[in-house]
View 1: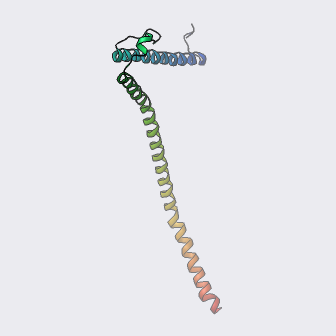
View 2 (view 1 turned 90 degrees about the vertical axis):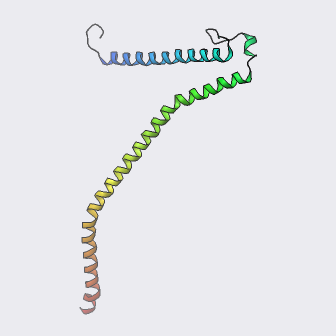
View 3 (view 1 turned 120 degrees about the vertical axis):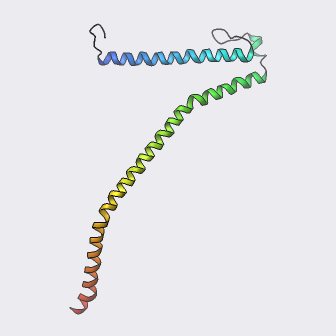
Length: 140
């Protein structure tokens, strides 16, 4: 859409990169603001735009405040990775199920071919060798 009204491959790649960059910036800004709000809610002091607190405030946090911030960090990490882990687990389950179905289908096809060919060969083999070896060789 560079003036000609049509998207070529380079323009499509550019758009994909722009959308990806926008998503990443949104994630960074949102996480920064969530952390700032959390820190203010826990400590009562609003960190500056770089996330710093006054020096006296940094060393005066109670263990309970540290524990709350740490617990929220663990919960956020688990929340961030859970969809990825679940999607990986579901993909693996689907792959295993597909392989199992394929094995069943292969087994069904083999069973359909096996009785006719195995009965014919085993029937001819036992009857021919039994009658030929047992009776034919002694009498003839």
